[in-house]
Amino acid sequence: MNRRSGLRCGARWLALLLAATAAGRADSGVRTLRLIGVASLPAGTRCDGERVGGLSGLDYDAAHDQWLAVSDDKGEFGPARCFVIRLAYDAAAVGAVAVTGVIRLQPAGGDPNGGAPVPGGRVQGEVPDLESIRIDPRDGSLWVATEGEAKWGHPPIVRQLERDGRHRRDLPLPSVLAHDPSRRTGPRPNLSFEGLAFCPAGDAVWLALEAPLWQDGDVAGAGKGAVVRLTCLERDGRMGRQVAYRLEPRPLVPAPRRLADNGVAEVLAVSDRELLVLERGGAQQADGTWRFAARLFLASVASASEVGGMAALPAASFTPASKRLLLELGTAAGERVDNLEGLAWGRVLANGRRSLVLVSDDNFSVSQQTQFWVFEVQP
Image (cartoon, rainbow, N blue to C red):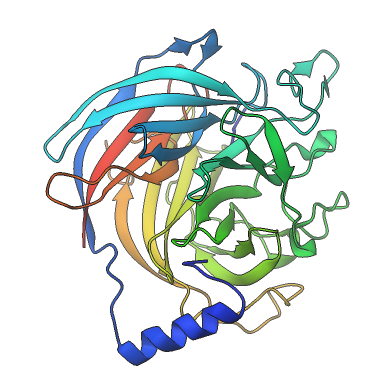
């Protein structure tokens, strides 16, 4: 958020769940995480004329040993774009990080310069508020989730693009996720499509909302959590499954008369029934700057109720996804963590274990950093 199936769906889901239950197997996913190190981009980094910052989504291109990261600046500092990044690390240490290229992402109309704000509060074309990016495991194309900009008439979308950034298609979405200008139902502005994750088989994607739909209750507050929907979408946009996920209360206390929040920042598939869910919270300080915290949960959707047919959750009876805390950053006094928004599997380490990388969105602020947190996954 900018501040200024594997998870298989439909009929296949029941077969998978019954098979897993009968076998009594445990998921071979994530038990704990070990921090390898943190790398930061220098402030003011540019590549191919574009300012680097606002990195809100991250994915690893294993074929070329590089990373792709999208910026969520809504066109303020450049067109919709994806940065190509090299990140050196092994099981012992994290080395240098460098931005090596830019992929400009075209909107449906094909103009890569669309979406830039102009005087008078209008915009030219779409507003590129990109929050997540995934590389299609089947053909290498790019999938992105964008929150759009409701005040300018641009709803949130899930989009597929060619590898060079040319527009391929926008995914048709179920009506429960449709933008409602009256703000009675549907996603909240700037709190909508935040996380995207391919299921292990690549036949569907999970789409995560940052905050509850209008009809599903209030956003997370002090001492009070919230409920968001996680939606499994087939590749043609049909909803295969939708479950509820309980957000934690806000992790930090703001200065008097200042703002604070907590929401889902990203999701990542671990197995046919497990997701990593990154919750990111922030609290505004007296000087207007923000302090951030992040909590990473392992969520199981195996026993969660289907909520796709429920018009509103507050009056409904349902079982949400279960969750277990894996990682907590930024809540201890003096602990510095920035605005972590991106989450992706990395390269396999020499010891055979997976790596996991988180990236922060610096909001193009001099008081923040673009950080890459690298972990070893311990199964």
